[in-house]
Image (tube, rainbow, N blue to C red; front, side, top):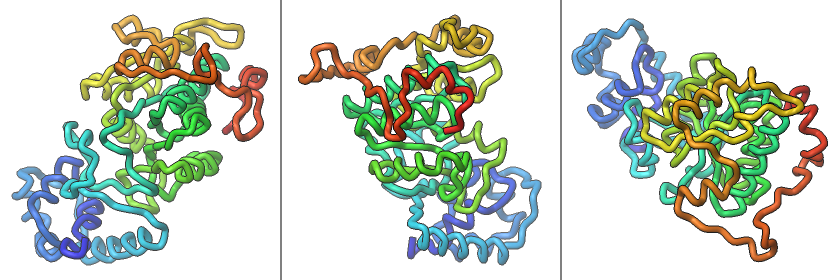
Length: 330
């Protein structure tokens, strides 16, 4: 960072560029002084494309210096495309982020992550299954990565943390801007677990609607496999599913995302039903996942396998409260 100065921050802040453009600039320039001497026209020639936004490089540099100070003050780390610590799975996708901002510790690239996503307003059965699968996967020593949203994301994070795993969340905002705010405690627990809050957006960036599809591609990219627990026909989870197919990941759907129950109807599960109809495999329990990953897990204390606790750290009885889940903001 000392040799590059504010190069990473400046490239992150230049407007009107795609992730691939930013990676190209990181590959083409070695230090802060090199980039600030370039005019917009110089960069257009270098990238061989028109940039539809103007900027004042002095203002960009001043903001970059401010963000660098914020990162130091708030213990926010940065890893760029040129760093050895950059997650190798991100290098394999078409549009990798040039820079990642994160709090905590990045996942071990040698250990597979399970991507788990789904609707913000799930059926009680799907919420319970998300928690249980994530819990059991955590007990087996594997981590879940999700988006810290309400509903399936939150239940997946909670289950995995209760199972003893380090948690990982990819945000559609800066790593210091927790959205929704009701999940701030959950974000804190993720950091306390030894996991990370990860974002391609610098600190201070507020969540925007268009950030979340971009966030979903990172969840898919960092995962070995992606499980869509439950999704309606129009759902951001289906964007994650599309990225999983594009990235060559195993794409699965949870069994409860296909079933009608007392508190849910199939009308709210048409997204997962369509994925299954298109060939996505169905997951009934964590044992299915370990089998597909060629791992085995034996719980010596319980011949029947891992049993999810009936209450989480907040004291909510999962079995009896799931019927009221749609009214709860976690």
